[in-house]
Length: 197
Image 1: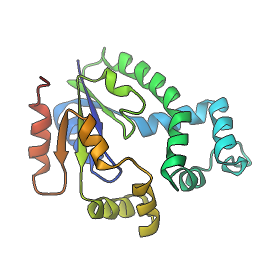
Image 2: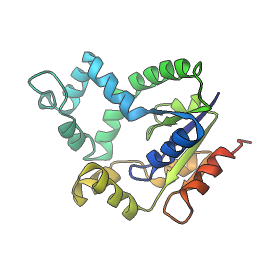
Image 3: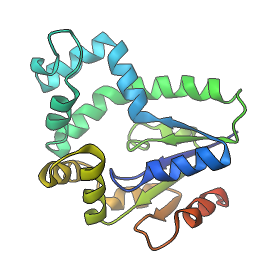
Image 4: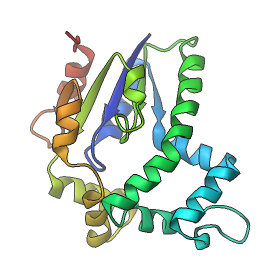
């Protein structure tokens, strides 16, 4: 079964591309952000480690994670984002591998591994090929504000805390420009027709 890695900066439009591939073409989407949430909720040692890095007050009185406060601190700088990634990625990668093994036995046309940190977590090694979805910073900022209910300043902080677009272009096998110049259907067809040399 084909495994396609989908990555790119926040707000580039990975989710829309994945949605079309799942709804119309029978792919299973493995969302690394959802896996990370699941892993953090279940792994008390990881939660403790995050509190050591970002402050005990990210843990609420009921023992759960204050996700908004963690995001505020983790995305305040590239260094903090890297610290979050280093703590979370090993557990996410392990869980993602388990899910992929299970889903390969199910009736899907392929698996989409949707992960901003696809290369940093080494999950790209599981993929037949990788796709970077890109869009201009202004477009991404607008999408983040609408999607997450953030202020322009908060959205810009998230953009600034991530790797530059050049990182994704240098590492991915296929680059998809989701700025609106090409239809979403056209972009999806490029992915479906791609063959890695």
